[in-house]
Length: 101
Image (cartoon, rainbow, N blue to C red; front, side):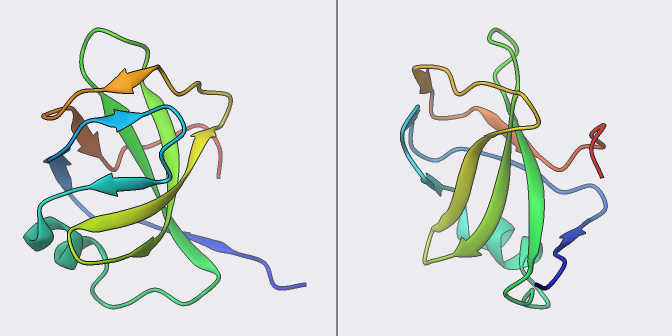
């Protein structure tokens, strides 16, 4: 079994273009920020940990595993965080240092 690897980007931060419900596995982000996040293109066993934070609800950590046009594919509720009912458009999406390696 291959061991995966978390990628890091310096000072990467954007916001949701479209609200995201708790069950959504696709997040809508501005394309220029998706391009900055995924250049160079990560391998199939690499990912990015992203934090969603609107300043009101508890932040949620998600694992970004792929991209589309205007979207990224994510695995929700990572590292013990919980997906709220909805993240509104404009919610911050950032790469932050997290406790788990």
